[in-house]
Length: 141
Image (cartoon, rainbow, N blue to C red; front, side):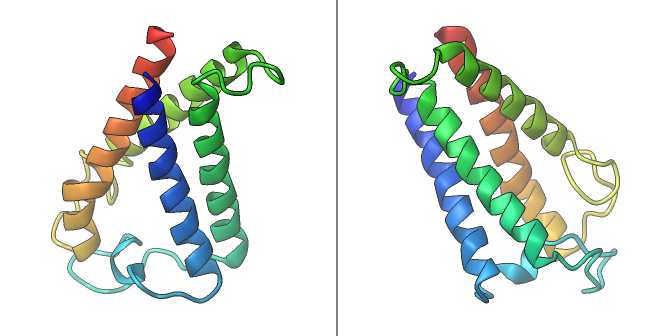
């Protein structure tokens, strides 16, 4: 389980770094990570700096939780706290993978936009992977 926790932690850390990059003005990848209406390029929302930093810090916390499941912090916190954190991660990413039945997730109706195609190919499967492996880490330890 150590390697799965490490992989998940690296995924979360990388996503956190990407969000901090966007926070400080980076634009790479921004065109296809926000849902749009149908085939248009009209974004459904414009993320604020506050929301970007909250997500970036949240992803960093998730990376720490994943690493914590290796029992590396056993002298500071009990493993059960990290396991509860992993259950929370699994819950959040299961909901994200299922989606809102409109623009996001496996059951979305809007499927023709650039975001929707990337969501089907990359984002939702990644969320399902994270949810599944997070549960696996909890129940295998």
